[in-house]
Length: 319
Picture 1 (tube, rainbow, N blue to C red):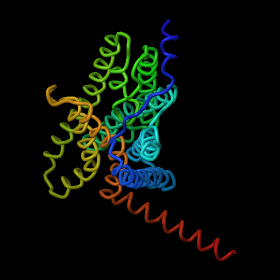
Picture 2 (picture 1 turned 90 degrees about the vertical axis):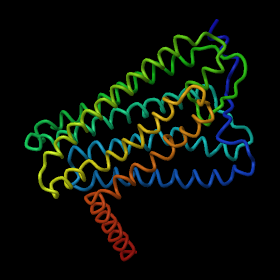
Picture 3 (picture 1 turned 120 degrees about the vertical axis):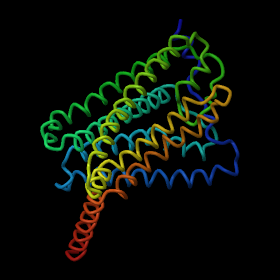
Picture 4 (picture 1 turned 60 degrees about the vertical axis):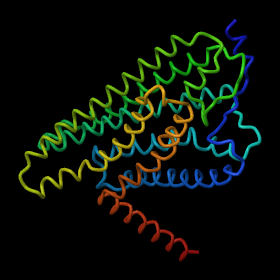
């Protein structure tokens, strides 16, 4: 019965960011520029970390995975959003919508826990520097990355299966620019009570668990920094976690803005604007934050560019 009802809707219509025709082309140009910076920045960061031996440390291992996650969840949303700026009908097939939701949830949840893993790494580096290589061994780092990926995939799979086993037999216009849980639930003809409880439970657990790890780590880090007597020592300790603090503040600040608004001020339109920030803007900002505030990454990037230029010169000379 359920499968027969689901077949009534074979595609969804995405309302998008704006329905004003005069803003379609400017928005396309803007988001294309942002996406190009996102792809080049994150891919560049991954390549630089992989090829430069000086960056083969736990901190940069986590950073390369953060760049990969940013690239993936931005790519799950942004290309389709840009196509919709120029398409006559902003449609997405039923199964494509499920795939988009699953990919987005997987990488979004992974980012939450990767930031927590990175906070723990900085805690160990500053509070237990003599035991850092033991506490942050290759096996530990692998687990601190593998667990978020595995957990996020399973949670995303559960949410996606439940969402797309609901009955959709009426309106098919999603008031969003991508397939998200809450706008989809608004279109369902069936009882969504269980699904709403699951969203609340898992979102609450993910936010509380990951943010608690981050906050606890930084409380210990701040306490350790305050015990350092020399100004230079304090400055060096702060510089090792400054970029991560900025990235965490932006990421969790956006999520808090979305989910802790007063109900009277909450709307799907507000969610759309916040969603643009964490699906499109944050993946672009992260590589910039870690590059501009990190001398080691800057030096490695400069070295990689110089090698690339030398290689091109040799190839041209041979021709």
